[in-house]
Amino acid sequence: MSARLRSLFFASGRRRLAARRIARAVLAGLLAVASPGTAGAEDAPVTWAVYAAPPFMIAEGPDRDAGIFDRIRHLLDDRLVGAPAPTLRAPFPRVVASLKEGAEICFIGGVRTPEREDFAVFSLPVAMFYPLRIVVPAAQRGAFEARAPLSLAALLADPGLRTSLLKDRSLGGPIDALLRAAPQRVHSEFGEAFRMLVAERLDYLIEYATIAGYEARSLGSGTAVAALPFAEAPPPVFGRVMCPKTAWGRRLVARIDAVLRVERGTPAYRRIVEAWAEAGDLAAVRTVYDRAFLDGE
Image (tube, rainbow, N blue to C red; front, side):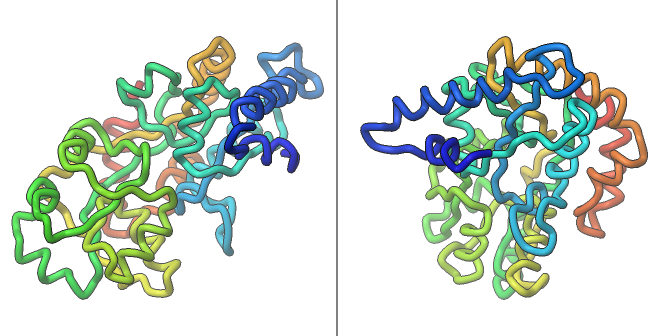
């Protein structure tokens, strides 16, 4: 992806509207060029939006590009066009805003919600977000366990406790409803929130155990935080490929689904989904894989 296109994607101020139009035109041009040996525009590579969400998307460090969604992206590129497709790095809220505008980009890991179905189309499930936990500084574990049974609704109602949410994120319908009823501060990067938590600028986060474990290790200690179960913890939420709700997006999702129907039942694909699961959660993840994930539509 060229530096020019990246600059257009992030344009601001009075030039933003014009820049968006140019960016979409450039993206459309990229996607209209068929790869070698293909028949037409519908076979052109997607431009993937990526952002830092380890261990699902790992943008830097020794594990760079080895996240769950990174590996699924590589698999889809290989099966769809036989070569790596362009990527465009942007914060998650910017990705969602661009999809609302109809930009010809997709990203891996979108949660399907009624609100998002107004502007996006979704593939079959590609991976799972599970289990969801209340994440606290390790030193505060006892104080939160003393609240047993731990309740997210009670935490949100406590004015003395601080948390933060990733802007535009969905954690599944029931949790989203609780969060809408108790607006909190927002952040745009996962690492930002964990740094605030460890620095005691936040009291807790609502986060998946896989992400919490990886972020704690990235801060230098796998024991820096504790991930606690809570009463309203939801069933698994499935991540999907999310594309604009356009003819282009529908065609691409249909091709992606054809690949997923073949690949999701293979041992290699299972290893991708399980790659970064916490040891204590692995058995539960495997049960969900067999009982719900493979049948997910």
